[in-house]
Amino acid sequence: MIEERIQKIQDLLRKEACSAWLFYDFRGSDPIAYRVLGLDAGAHTTRRWFYLVPAEGNPVKLVHRIEAARLDPLPGEKRIYLQWQSLRRGLCDMLASHPQVAMQYSPEAAIPYVSRVDAGTVELVRAAGTEVVSAGDLLQHLECVWSAEQLQSHRRAAGHLARIVRETFNWIASRLSAGTATTEQQVQHRLLEEMKGVKLVTDFPPIVAVGSHAGDPHYAPELGQETPIEPDRLVLVDIWAKDSLPGSVYADITWTAFYGAEVADHVRRVFEVVREARDAGVAFLRERLRTGQTVRGYEVDNAVRSVIERAGFGEAFIHRTGHNLGEEVHGNGVHFDDLETHDNRRVISGIACTVEPGIYLPDFGIRNEIDVYLHPDDVEVTTETQDKLWHFRV
Image (cartoon, rainbow, N blue to C red; front, side, top):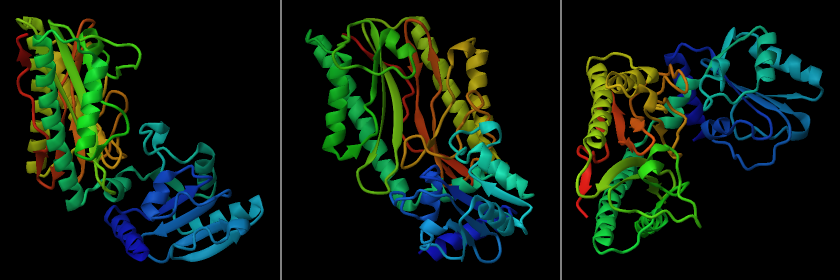
């Protein structure tokens, strides 16, 4: 199994024309390295180790004498250091035939998800005469490409979330029509209970935001500060979850509904602009993939953002267009982002991301979030889409 993993890394290095991948860790500083290599991240580790996987030939381990067995599960030649001087010599020796190596490094920390190796260690590698390049695109192939089982787990979660949100919006409407007091916190609790009932798990409770609270992208209801849901208010629900089975991956959606006699024209207009921007992102991806062109994360963000900017709401779109999805809701793969970061990583087949433009104003906000899965020559929208602002007359 581990040998197959290393062979996969070497195949990828050759495909990407990269000489070698250098893994490094100190006291669990790089959880990505443990996942990619299949190491036990919970094992007690107090000394630095390096593991070099070349595109051709056998891997090389560099471990401290006190923890000489730390990398024994991995194939390759073991080399042991003791003094700091022997660490430097050992590193120089293992890098001697590699003018360039990939590491969990991002130039100027442009992509924080990838930037795991500290600046001093990068300097140490460079002092050996070896250039350091980012392993960002390599990581996507090993960390972010879904198996067929993972894609199915995502679809199951997405189906459950859509049903839960639809039913919850109707539940809110019935309570308002009956004059029953309802709060953000009660809605959040209901969502969590519904998720629990179908064995979905999440890392954080869903967002339920009423009125001006929806103008804050990361607003979260707080216990003890009950916020009522009243007529003539817009309600935003952002919910993300995955199956409880190991290896399952997240689905993530955001929908909005208005409760009241009439929806104001400017509210409806904002929804339409956000929906148009969402669809522009999908169309851009589809066109590029179908024509065999390379797509990079920042390009998708620009395609979506330009729609909102042309409509005059550019200053109100205050986050990236979308994030990678995986076993963590914010995965380590490419994001659709040219705002918070300039994500130059390639969009590759087998990964999934959100597309979630939003416009945030003082009295309300609207975000419309879908998930997309990237096939080699097409894009699949895996979540139900909300194409009209839901209007409940209460």
